[in-house]
Image (cartoon, rainbow, N blue to C red):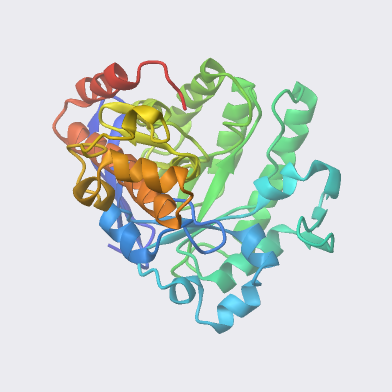
Length: 373
């Protein structure tokens, strides 16, 4: 298949299993994408990622632009070569990071002025600029520049933000027209927590020929019911023959809720961040590895898990590493959590193909219940 082709292979209710082709290989969906913000998934290397089951990872335009600089990355042969990752890479536009710096940025119709969180230096992101940065990075999937309204934004703010995001999306596509090269570009649906504005944003974004479509502006402080309502009402509006990406979400149950609603792609820092905090996800539920009860526990963290941490080390040893602040703790914990999240998505894919997704989801819910880490 040519880069950008999405083959929908099976459905089970609204849940979907498919394959997206990129310049660096196929991505089988549903898929969880580990976050490598600055060109590194914290504490692990590319071989660890491959062994954990990663097919595609993320980089961040804002952070890589500031350090080491997209021009430097381009001179090194692009982000794949720079970080020695041979699989696909998706780069966020940096919009969320810029807009989270509310005290350090100024919005204009042409883009956004902001100050670096590193040294306070002034910068400007236009739609054309973020496309140029992502071209330099050489990612397989580029995201458009959008504005992410803060949680609690009123309807007028959300509507104005929608207009701006729609304008910027078109400018991004014009800066890199469809068919210009092997890099793909995804549009982003915004609209706050107003279902009619989300529907309008989806319609406006779908007027532009993107290779995929994302839901942005979720997991920004809203309640779980609010997130689910927007996700369930908006996902079915997106094209059936294009991949659907839920940005920045979430827990194991969030991911399964998203798959149930028809979402194909997910990313979140939760598994890697929680690994560094000692919270591990297993087929038997969450484990806080620093608890004293594991001090003399010679059993594996998760008996059914094939990862390095579970194959070779005991809970007692993993606890010892963590409480001693040994660097190996962060690597092993991260390998395990990523293996769990990637296996969760792979298991969902198999369940969709076999027509048993509801039972699969119920099984995970029985373990995790309402616990949303």
